[in-house]
Image 1 (tube, rainbow, N blue to C red):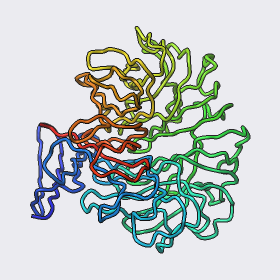
Image 2 (tube, rainbow, N blue to C red):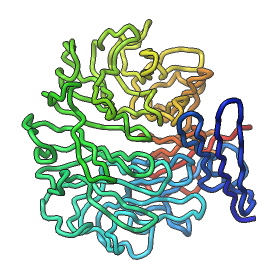
Image 3 (cartoon, rainbow, N blue to C red):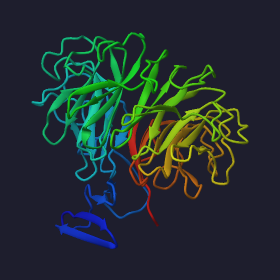
Image 4 (cartoon, helix red, strand yellow):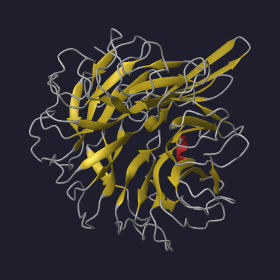
Length: 464
């Protein structure tokens, strides 16, 4: 019993509903399964990759195929929709054989094979001759990985001397550059922090370059999106009328189909009435060209303090998770700390999610949020000690809030639910919220963690 692939095709017409199920190679493990549904529209739903009995476990993934711990720092995970593949950045040179370039690289760990592969490589497999970094992003299907790199040999004729954004196709092995103009001109400044859509078509990133699009004269970090299918690059940190921003924009997130792009910006001219003199979180709609401000209260009142960090948008673009210092986005926000909020594009409602299960507000700040594909779950980092019972470690932890039932649990703990011995930082979440990847410097999350470095872990949440 090796593998199981289920493909569900649903068609509706009038009063008829047809369901076809194709099963090949029945197995106890489900590997990168997906349900493609066309119900007066289209959607892609991923089933979780299951490799072992489905119970809550914590595993370290920043290790070699033999189980040797990484001999360098590993961090900033990104996870595929089904939870099978995790991309991350690492200084280690023992995760794969013959890693001798001496630079930080991008790796992908496969939970099916318990192996990591090096993806910051050229199309012929040569290692990068410079640092690769910037928070790699893996496409929901796990095929494509985008990352920033200083390397000059990942593609031919890379002569601009700046940090660029690349995409590696794990199926074909091809690596391409995407921080270029629509006519293929290389950027004349640094680019960083990419994110990638379903199927790898769209890559969004921030850049200081002024030659990626015409009439870029604001001398600011802007948000760009490159369409790999047609080779077009557009700037999306603009007002609905196309006016360029008058402030720095950064940390973009993209919906599965690439239509909606969120970002944080210092600009005050992207929407009418932006007078709060603070950073805000925005959503740009590629389809109709509009930009709206998401960091507002449910009645549209602008935030009285700034947004910070990276926002995270749901698969369909409806829900946006973001961090803000504002205390007027929801009622009774009196904790005087930054919180995590979710904005609903459909209802224009803003809710706070960095809360305990009984609704108690956090007694310390929160940040580094990510939202599940359907918008139900939000994972985030917090120093708060009152979000779950018996949080006495005094360190930053990773928490998961379920927006449907209002519960909050702590993720950064061991199989035995022992709390982490040190700080945890960045996290990522699978489509259905059952697999959380995070990095931590804690040494007690798994047995035998003696390398002394930040490692990447996964927490698999059982449905017991």
